[in-house]
Amino acid sequence: MLGFLHAFNPRPQSSKTDLMQTNRGPGGGNMIFPNRTEAGRRLALRLRDYANRKDVIVLGIPRGGVPVAFEVARMLKAPLDVLVLRKLGVPGHEELGFGAIASGGIRVLNPQIVEALRISPGDIELVTNREARELKRREQAYRGRRPALNIRGQTVIVVDDGIATGSGMRAAIDALREMKPARIVVAVPVAPPSTCDHLRSQADDLVCLETPEAFYGVGQFYFDFSQISDYEVNELLDRAAREIDEQNHSPAEVAAIEDAT
Image (tube, rainbow, N blue to C red; front, side, top):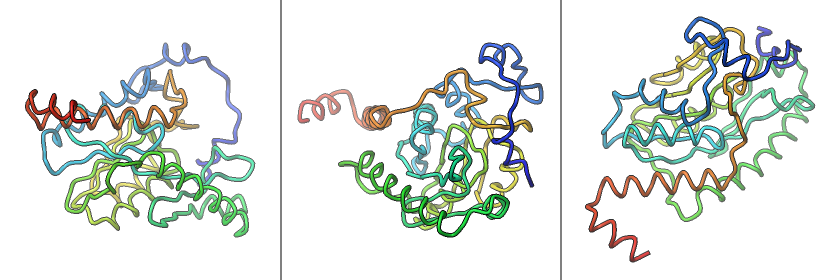
């Protein structure tokens, strides 16, 4: 029950180089991805059964999930979009989420964390309102002129750079169910085994490359875990849209479209 409290426990400090040297792969110590791009490419290999299908769409969770999702969408030759979520962080320890919110007024709380840390209803509402404002801002920033998300009848692959407690992904699944997809696939490079066990009962499929027992945070498993900007998110969405246009049109048609814009 107290596994989620690892985030509060001090642990020996190791450099990223030390962790890279101890990388042994599945079941053999820390699995470190060089960066989100490489993690996405490895993840795409496990999702190859979904490649070249017209009913598949890849959704990245901003911000960190978008570079991973971009590589997945590119290798599967599927369109890329985003699903905006906001973690509800424990006051004073915001890196630990006690829940999450998603588009459409969806909120999911982790009752274990709320009870164990005695988070008051007032604090829950305070954090929720603050994150709801940021969620709205990000939706406007990423959506822009893009059409509203429409996934009815489609197979949705929702991608993040990793999962810790799973509250955010549960909120994502709840929000997506409201949009009536045919199938929801959760795909991440790394997550604790207990979180994966919980999510398997909610998603139609779950693909996770690594499930380490010793889990203190997603960034632990990346050599480069740099923060992603709104600009980078939009740049990746634009690049993905251009690549899909090139797949669906002849070179002459693509040139005509570019000239018109």
